[in-house]
Image (cartoon, rainbow, N blue to C red; front, side, top):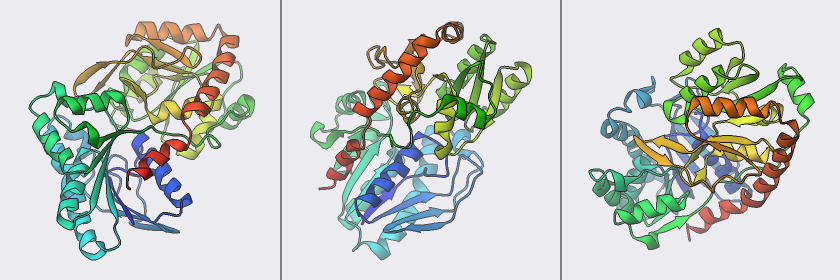
Length: 383
């Protein structure tokens, strides 16, 4: 049995949650037995069964204090870390007491789970693997580097989503031989081009307007504020905001003031392709330094061009995006400046032929780079 530890899982909303659900689906198709230990959603109000079983896959969602504590503790990262770690460690320790013989490998997701999984691996003598889903930039925060190095050292293998993440870990003293690169993937049968007219009809959107689509958590690091400011400066483009998060009230205020800004709210992942195909461009798609987030990957697979900025801001770290990351055939990269973002939005409304060409380019790029073969790298790491 593969034991997956994560504070975040569906129906919690986010790119990592979708990635994990995709990986669980992959394990099911591969005939592997797995168990997910996670919390009931802690950043959204939607709840799910405490226990679910689908064939050889089990999911345990344990009760845990939510009330947006995760976001409220962002100014106190040490306390936030303990908040994420404590419950996962307690529940997984109890699980291992009764199931240790069945567990072959412990696969943790994120740094807090990495501490839990690493400790459990030592206690119960199991292989411990951790996946990191972002670039933490520990090398720029010397005070945290020793703790991160120790936590990751408890694990036998570290899977990272980008070269930038690997370089950062090597700088703080993590052994390079323990680090392995992997990439996200997309179900390209689910996320695929559909009829624009039919999708717009289903969503009640007019045929004769340009539509920009924002998908993601409504938090500052997702550049929601910049997206809103840009949308307010491009009245000829309808801007749909899909997601949930602390900045939802801010979006409501903009939507009341500007007719072209519309708050859609939470949309289940199965319905997102409908929005991709109704839209003309993804507004400020998820990206960090040298890799795309799940939201951007899914959009490109659907044939939706993406508009990204040239910098990101996670964990109080401003990072420049690799200018060669986004091919010209897939979208646009602009400075993180609402005026310049708005200018690009206004420009797309005058270039229908260019958008059609970008749609084809996005789909081709996704089929080449975001295939299911990326999942095999993770499974092979258990050997």
